[in-house]
Image (cartoon, rainbow over all chains, first blue to last red; front, side, top):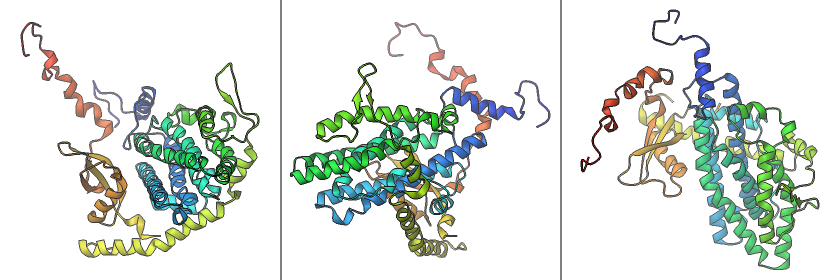
Amino acid sequence: MSVTSPGRPAQDESAPQRRFGALIAAERRIEPRDWMPAGYRETLIRQIAQHAHSEIIGMQPEGDWLLSAPSLRRKAILLAKVQDEAGHGVYLYSAAETLGAERADLTRKLIERRQKYSSIFNYPALTYADVGVIGWLVDGAAICNQVSLCRSSYGPYARAMIRICKEESFHQRQGYELLMTMMRGTAGQRAMVQDAVDRWWWPSLMMFGPPDDDSPHSAQSMAWGIKRQSNDDLRQRFVDMTVPQAECLGVTLPDPALSLDPETGHHRTGPIDWAEFKQVIGGDGPRNDERIARRRAARDAGAWVTEAAAAYAAKHSGAPA
Amino acid sequence: MTARQDWPLYEVFVRGKRGLNHVHVGSLHAPDAEMAVHAARDLYTRRNEGVSIWVVKAAGITASDPAEKGPMFAPNTDKVYRHPTFYQIPGDVPHM
């Protein structure tokens, strides 16, 4: 529009940009059809896709135990939990699609290792105690992160997070209850729990991402309201929540330097091995190849079902496939 | 590459309980409306979230333009006399 009529605001290039900035500054949500900077859109697609992939790949470590659950009760619980993870992945893919991404394309990028997922799911679940520790520590860390993201500036992402958080609480509690049960059992069972805690503690701390001074995208994401709290702040929150839970459970967190700072009231941890984090996120963790191979096999082996359903729908609607 | 990306997008609406409206809860892909209802049941009502589901193809929805928000909805704020608080009534008049 080249002519500005009296009484109407100028429709120049920067008007949508100003509206976007004003919404962010006022802590209002951005919705799918609003104008947004290309960087905002790309950052969201990358982050939401990575989050969705984590939920989908996250079914695998625990899914390995579905056929070996120690009782029908534990099996029903684990099935419900793994089904939730699939649901969470789909909520998130839906949110990414409101930004113009295509789900099949995101899955392809995951399989071709062009998009990442949480490093934590590249570690194996070696015993049934791992199922409990994953619920307690891994889902506990995820909840810390996700509660914060319920206030993310992008509406569909924030709404997906609210729905997910409601369901994650069950995940963490079933894990902790499982561990309490094992801790009341034999010395061998207690040793299994401690062994699982020893293996999952440090990778859980790495789930929050690199330290703030080594997190290149963080500042822009915070300015856009996509992220609401920094990696280190969320990690600290998780540590402070988890230390007393470990005491109640009767396990030792594998960090001799872990101590309460009387001045701040926060628990201080020893140094995190960021070289390990970079190695695992870079593709060279204990189970990376296996996780991707299984996701690819699931897509390829299920292709005939999706094709048949599409053919059936086309036949019954009269439209070409 | 796979047929999956050709499945249309459906928007899902769930009635939480009798007496409430159906409310938009999200979206999903399905080959047809019947499958969309089944998938919506698995995806959005795993914990008693609803008693009724509607699905509608996303392509069938016509929406207002967010950039036109001002002119589109301006009459709502212009016409303050449409709101009961516009009218001054003495406090001792009962049942008003």
